[in-house]
Length: 225
Length: 78
Image 1 (cartoon, chains in turn blue, cyan):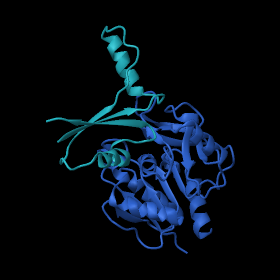
Image 2 (spheres, chains in turn green, blue):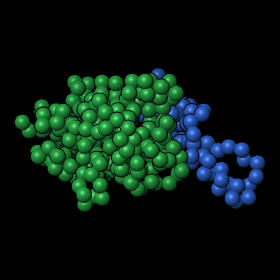
Image 3 (tube, chains in turn green, cyan):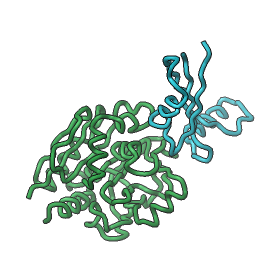
């Protein structure tokens, strides 16, 4: 059974190709490429990815314009039906702006753009996206962002922690994120947003393959091994 | 008519940009600046019939991110 996925491209997305390459490498099937101005998604999707980069110049706030683009209505509707959605970097910002994930991503506490490989701790291994990791496993994944400083009020943070919705946490100082949160799940567990780029760590030539298990988990979970 | 929307970070939300501006002011030799908060000013030119409730919705749906920001709407007399 083939894995039917889609990668959304916004004006300014620049990791959409990397995401498509990763999805095809792991699943064996090339994802559909969907433009931000499209009003609908292909039928019968197993997986939707919102890539990193920028979107609409990130005017107003990172991801704010993209979250109101035509295709996002379809993505929000698909997420509500339970279709898995992965948002990486700008994709994570878009998901918070669209209200699919709680919180907001603010300017890095150190002001500077951070572009390097960082250590993450896998906090939740029960989700569709993270079942291939060991609890507490330390993984190395690249980050490249200016607005990755996760913020939510204390009550929301407590709820996320209590419900096991913190998927990944930084194991080192990166951007000032509340409680070092690097990736969060929605309450149904089918939407994951994360600042680090797993699609940039799936091939030994990338310098590491710690991102691979995320895609393997999703493909296995959705269409079987 | 002109409407001015001021968007600012909620109290308690860390403002790295404001802090950097404060440091730069200190670097320029200005003393006595205890805190700087950077916000955003958005000016809209709207028809007179646009209601306060509609302006409020514009802020809530797009102009401000209610997770981190407050907004203030001001109609500017011509």
